[in-house]
Image (cartoon, rainbow, N blue to C red; front, side):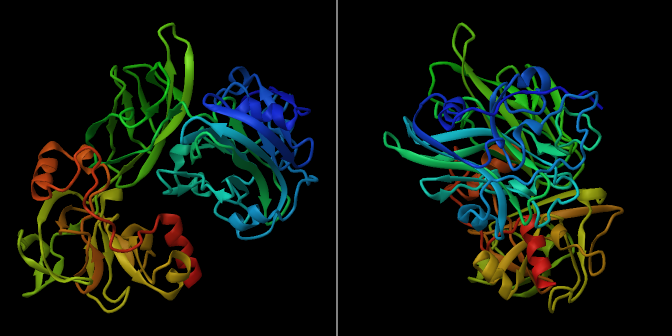
Length: 528
C-alpha cells in the first residue's frame, strides 16, 4: 500500500493545448477539437515524481470516461475507492466507438486533431487504466480505446496485431499488465498496462486527421482512463516490434535496435525494459519468468524458463545527442514464442500409408490436405522432460472428429472446421494451438517422464494428417534466421536458400488463419 498523492491536473486545457502537449518532433498541429465532458480531459504533470511507475511520461494528456482528476487521490492511501465511477455528459453511442466495441458505448471522451507529418510513420506512447479490472476482464464491459487515422481504425495491439489491448490483463499477457488491487501503485485504477505504443501510418507533407479517445462499453459504470505521454506522437523515432523463437531454458542474444527507425542526429539507447529503468549489465525478471539482460552494445540476452508459452514484453529507447540532450523516445515490443512440433510415436499419413513421425526422413512423400503428396524437406527432433507447460497435449480419439488418439506439443496447431469460423475469421477452417483446445476431458495435458518433439517442414506450410487429424507442419517465423541456434539456421537455409537472412521472409504464408488464444476462446464460446 502506498499513500495517495495527486498529479497536477489542468482540466481547463483547450483542445489545441492538449494537442500541442502530446504531439512532438516531426509533426505540426494545424487544428484540434475535443468532445466529452469538460471534466473528462486534462493535461497532467508531475508524473515522474508522484506516479512514475504508472504514467507514460512526466506530463501528458488524460482522457477519461469519468472525472480525469480522479485518476489519483490525495489521501493516506492510494486506490481508496474500489469502484471509481461517474456517469458523465460525454457522447453516448458514438458510431466509431460502437463499431469497434460491437455494442453500445457511453461517456466518450475524445480528441480530433489535424496535423502535418514529415515522415510516414508516427508513434504514440500511452497507458490504459481501468476500474473494470479485474472483475470484468474478458467480458462485454471492457471499455474501449479507439484511434482512427484519416477515417480508418488503427487497432491498439502488440506484435503486429497479435494481441489486442483488451487481451492484456491479470490472466493474459501479464508482462504488460500491472495489478493494483493491493493498492501498491499511486492511482485509483485497479489495474493498468505498462507504457504501450501504437505505430500509425500517416501521409507525409499533407494534412492528416486523427481521432483518439476512450468510451465506456455496455454501460456507463466504472471509469477507465487513457494517458498519452507528452511529445510522444512523433515521427523521429520508431521502435519496431521484434519476434524471437526460442527453446526452453536457453539464452538468445537479440538486437532490438537493429530494425528501429532513428530520424534524429543522435544515437539510440535502451532506457527501460517492461517499464523498469535499466543500465548496461542489469537483468530484469519478467512476471512470466523469463529474464532480459541489457548488454553494453544495446542488445538483449533473453533467457527462457521451463514454460512452454508465447509472451511479450516492452522496452523503451531514447535518442540523445553528444551533450546528452534527449531528442526523442519510443516504446517497442519483443514477442518470444516456442516451436510447435509432433510427439514421437505419432502416425503420419504418407503415400505408403501411416508411418511413425520419428521414422520419416527428408524426401519421404507425405499426404497434405491442399497439395496431395509432398516431399518432406526437413525434420528436426528434441527430447525434454514432459513437465508443466512443456508437457504434451493428449487428444483422445474422435475428440475433434474421426481420428485416432495422438499427442502434440502445446503450441502445435490443429485444424478446426466450423461455419462460425467463416463469419468470425473469413475461413471455415482455422488453426488453433493444442493448448487452447484443452477441456480437461478429451483434450488435456499429460505430465511425467520424457517426451521427444519432432518438427516436419515442407516447401510451404501444409495441413497434414497425424493419426487422421488435420494438423499443421512446421512454419518458420519472420525472425527464424535470427532466433534459432546457428546450426539449425544453417541447415534450414541450406535447404531453403530463398529465405532472406536479413528478414526471415521468403517461406510463404500460413496454410490457414492461425487463431490467437482469445480468438480461439471466442470461437469456442460461440460454438458452445
